[in-house]
Amino acid sequence: MQERPASIRDVKLRGILLILSIFAGPALAQKPTPKPAPAPAFDENTALGALRQLPKDAAKRLARIEARDGNPWPQRWYLLVYDPAEPRGLREFVFADSKLVVARTLSQFADTLNATDVIGDTAVKVNSDQAAGIAGQYALTNAVRLGTVNYELSKTSAGIVWQLTCLDPRGDQLGILIVNATKGSVLSHEGFLKAPATAAPAPTPVPKGVAPRPAVTATPAPKPTPAPKPAETEPPKPVVISVPAPTPKPAENKGFRDSVRKLFGSE
Image (cartoon, rainbow, N blue to C red; front, side, top):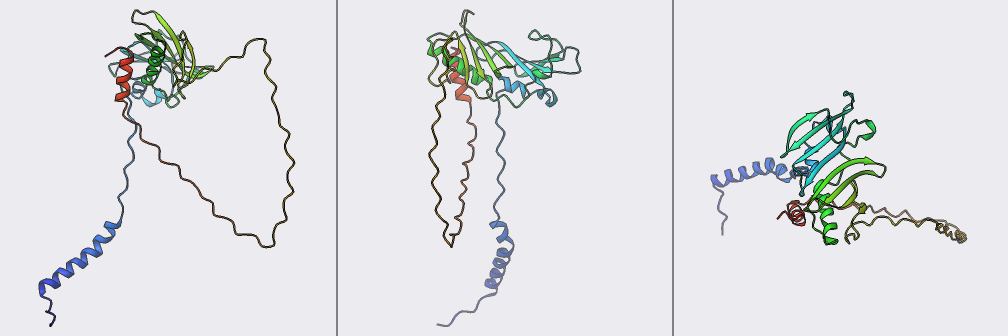
C-alpha cells in the first residue's frame, strides 16, 4: 500500500506542535515556587493576642501582663511596658474586647518599672489560654470547681512565669499555680494537693538535716592498645546526614478553647 502524502493541514499542525514544544517545554518542566507557611494566629482575646496589637517598639519593652476575673478569658488585659522617657518608667496599655481602649502612665499593678523588668515580645511561649487549661486540669484533678482566674505574667528569680490565682465560683481562693511561661512546666501548685498526670511535677525538696548522698564515681577501665594500622588504608566511608522532618503546622485551637470553657463551667 502506498503511503498517502501529508496534506497542508497536517504540515501546519506538526509545525504548531513543534513550536509549542520548544516554548512551553521549559515552562512546564519548571516547578512552581512553594508559598511560605502562614504565621500562627493568636486569639485576640488572649494575652499574646493583645501583645500582638502593641506597637513594635512598645512590645519589645513589655515588662508585665495582668488580668482579673478570667472565666477563662478576662474582660480586660493590662500590658505594662517599660518607658525610659517617663519619670516612673512605665506605660500601661489596656485592651477590652480585643481593642486598645486606653494608654496611660499610671497603673494599679506597679508604681515603677526599670530595664531589668523587661520581658520582651518573643520570650513568652505559653499563651493565657494554655495557662487556663492547666488551671482547669488542676481543678478537675482535685475535684473542685473553678470559677475564675487572675493572671499575672512577670519576670522573677525563677524566670518568666505565669502566676495563676484560681478562685471558685463564690470568689474564694482555691490555689496558686506558678507556670514557666517559656516551657509550660508547673513550678509550684500551692493549694492543690494533687497534680494531673500530664502536668510536670514540682521538684521534690530535700528534707532539712539530711546530707546529700555522695556522688559515686566509677574507675575507668584501662584503654586497650590500638592495633597497628595496615599498610593500605580503606577509603573513608561516606557520612550519612539525616534531615529532620519538617515541623508540623500548629493545629487550630478552637477545640482546645472549647475544652477550657467546659473546665471553667462556661458552657
